[in-house]
Image (cartoon, rainbow, N blue to C red; front, side):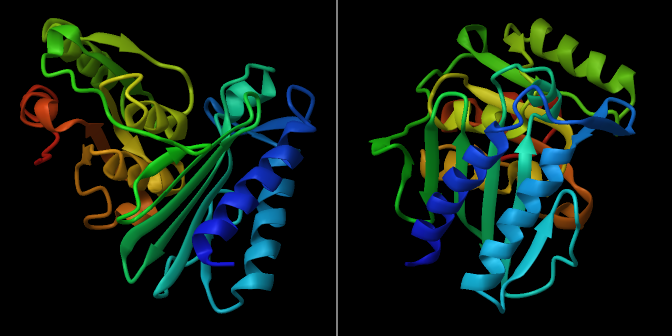
Length: 255
C-alpha cells in the first residue's frame, strides 16, 4: 500500500472512530473559543499509531500532541477539524491528514463522517471525492463569488471585521461554517470560489491545500517562513480571481 492509499484508508477509519463521539464526547476549553474533546486526543493517537506501524521513520505533526515538523517525510494531522461543530452535534467536521515530502505538500486525505464523503489528492494525480474528479469554480467575478472567511482568535477582532468589510464592499458574498479544512474542500469542489483566513495552522490546511491545487486552484505560499509550525494567512481560490482577491484582501497569491 503506498502512502496515498494508506492516507485514504486511515482518514476513513479515523473518521469512523471520531463519529462514535459525535455530539457526546466530553469537552473542555484549551483557550478562548478553542474547544477540545476527549475524542480529539483518541483519534490523534489512533492516527499516530497507524503511521508509526506502517512508516516508522516518518515524522508526525499533530494538533493535539505536536511534533517538531522535522524530516523529509512528514505527516500533518488534525484529528477533528471543526471541533466546535462536532462537540455541538453539528455535522460539519472532518479528519484531515496531510503529507509533505522534502518540504513539498504532496498528499491530502480528508474524511467527512457525517456524510460519508472521502476526499483525497496526490501531487500530479488530481483531486477526488469518492471517485469523482473535483474542479474549482470557473467564476471570474467577485460580484458572483462566495468567499468563506475563516475566523481565529489569534488575530484581533477588528482585523476580522475589516476582512468581512473588504469582501462585502468588493461585491462578494460571505460565509463561515466552522471548518477550515472543509472550507478548502469546498473551494476544490467548486462549491465556493475562495477561502480566506488571516491566521490558520498547518494541520488545518495541509491536506486541503493539496486538494485545491490538484483541483486547478491556487493558494498563497502558506508554508513560507514559519508557516508549518506557527501558521500563516491563507487564501485559496481559482485562477480568474487570484489577482482580484489578492489586491482586495492583501494576501499575495499568483496564478
